[in-house]
Image 1 (cartoon, rainbow, N blue to C red):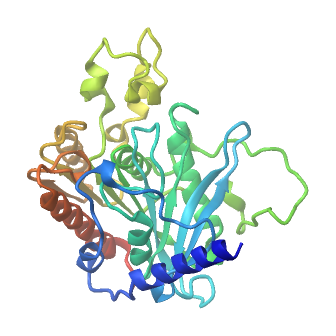
Image 2: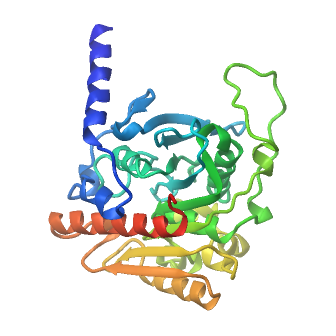
Image 3: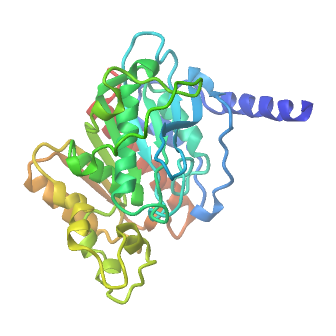
Length: 360
């Protein structure tokens, strides 16, 4: 036991030392200190503790907060990063909801591309005055579309319904994701209040216990699922034009087909359209930032080009950037280029979010 306590204490000390207070000087401050490996495979083991973690600058990390329980499935959780005073000082703060990638069939909220310590990055973002939530969702092997999209929207509703507990400003939410998470972020942003993604029927009521999480007035079901800004890294926006979908010989186990719930006889066209962010674009959509690697051999850069054109045609504010020499997950031939692009993408993301919804 003494050894365990010592190990936890050491972790907390390292966490506090690793991240200093960050002023509102732009995304470059966070990006410059973000550790990046040469490849996704070089990212280490989970670095987040299983207990509440105090980070430097007054940030509190709350891992594994259950935001939704669907009968028959694992509890759905998020990691929450609260800036100093959140929920106690009466100030309402903007919210960043991060959505991980993994082909809709894997991954987790504590990893992103080649960043070596993603919780540390998220905590440093929270230190700039944001409430940050990194969410998990049901994988395609558990439930096909629209389960994952519904889950992300449920997390947004849950954060709004519990806004007074965490000091949340319900009018300032950003969705940010990479790869499959970029797809989900774009879909969430373009489908505000779409009844197709409404909350599932709640489970039967049960007596309140110490584990019961109270919600704000009106409950989760009545809260909005809309966001006011979207950032997508190397996301998929038009599923029907993806090479894996166009390959009629692809097995149902191929990641996108598995996500869509395709069978051996093909995919349902209406479901493919409903799952494509490009099909939901209209003039009411929030501003978008789309970032992609020119050499991406997993998601063609044409996906970004096509989606950006659709947003612009609908008079939606959209900014784009294509990074030369970068493949999927910002991986480049030279490790130093991977680090450079990863940090540039992070800095541009935070600057965009600051302009759209950032602390005032």
